[in-house]
Image (cartoon, rainbow, N blue to C red; front, side):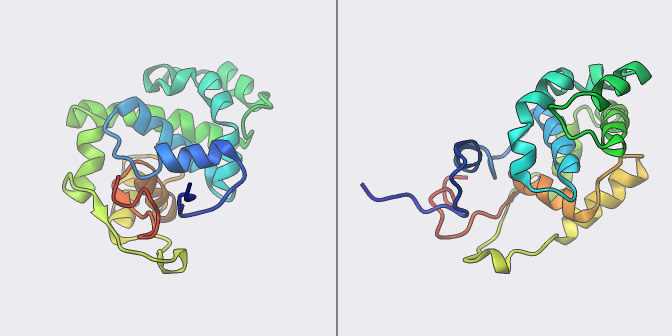
Length: 187
């Protein structure tokens, strides 16, 4: 049987499954959008593989990424998270997750859903690039920069253009699978 060609090679089955089943797939569920918004912010300065390996711990620590629950976290919850060895215990990133939950709920109230708001940056349509090498993939695109500016204006944290672009790739707003990858035409 011929081996599938992927964008990136890894021996980590968790990372491979993420590539094969999630990365670049369009997401319109607000809870999942919140999860990726937080996880992409956590990734800043780290590899996605590190964050992915801690994803299950994050799901438990952050109440399955329920933004309503996370928005009500107190100082006691913050201290609990700082002491949780299963997650990345960066205090700024933990505070940002709590702040972002509050801002997330405000956006939901204004737009009816976070999905309606966030997909507006691409007019509701996936951007499909045609890259044959990761050397061709930019660190961000104009839509990611626009998203970051607007999110920051609304009080979100850890939402610069590079993080926003990674978020866009993760949730399928952008298809940056390489053209040689078996997932390119599937997503």
